[in-house]
Length: 145
View 1 (spheres, rainbow, N blue to C red):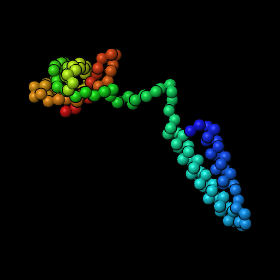
View 2: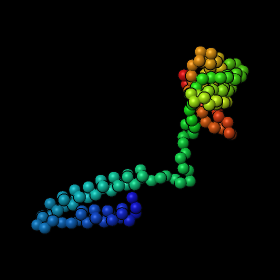
View 3: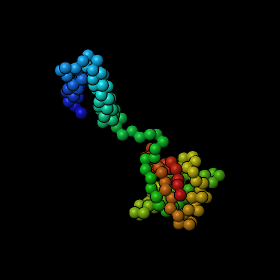
View 4: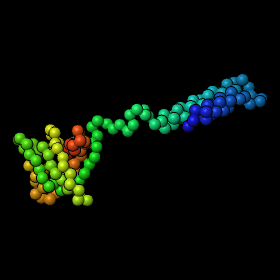
């Protein structure tokens, strides 16, 4: 909503609140004004809420996502499992349903051991890989059955 339009609405509502009806007693006028002031507050609050919800946010940081959110997800069959020390998964290659091959690295615990991931490979079961891009490489955030 443009600022000029908002100001026009505020002026119209203000005039409506303070407009007395002819032949009213003082107490009835005060009650009517109080009700109108209450409604003006409700309208002002709802207009403020609409204005706040419709704002684009800080233009310096467009579309920032939470730091824990993965950049993407892909589901597919395991082609290769790369194992580190103590059955720790350090990487894998995966083919998605469209035939594209993906190569991922794993930093730390991603929820599956290398042997469990290899079991999915042998049985032909698909895995869902949640990943993010770090230094130009696809890094696994989480593996899901």
